[in-house]
Amino acid sequence: MSKHPIVSHDEWLAARQRFLAKEKQFTRLRDELSRERQALPWERVDKDYVFESDAGRQTLAQLFGARSQLIVYHFMFAPDWELGCKSCSFWADNFNGIVPHLHARDVSMVAVARARRILRPRSTLFGRTRAFITTPTTRWVAGFVPASPSCASWAQSGVAP
Image (cartoon, rainbow, N blue to C red):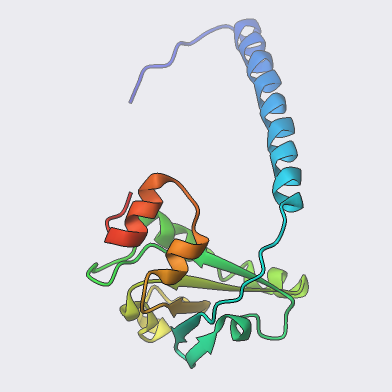
């Protein structure tokens, strides 16, 4: 652990106020980026994507359920891996609590991975109760995960960034 300087209250307060100004600047920038993301155009999906779930094969349209919006979380879990990405697993372990809030806002949510073993009984996979789906090819990932080059590489190779 690094050693932190110990200073007087006045020195700490001055440093904290400088940091607070940067935090506020960051918040304003994040808010602006959020508005820009929300204003992005939507893409018409003409391909027939089919996923495997614990309920059987489902189309993209069926994943929406009775809701008008769908969040698809890209869960990095390649077919030859024993476990999913540790960061993805961390976030997925916290999904259960947000699902009712999403449903109240007309939103469904699923997590998609390449590994079929993610579909094993939910009680054996960290006690998860949210919907996990898998796709037998990388076509979905390559078409809808325009992230960093390392993620694009993962989509093709299965090697986590």
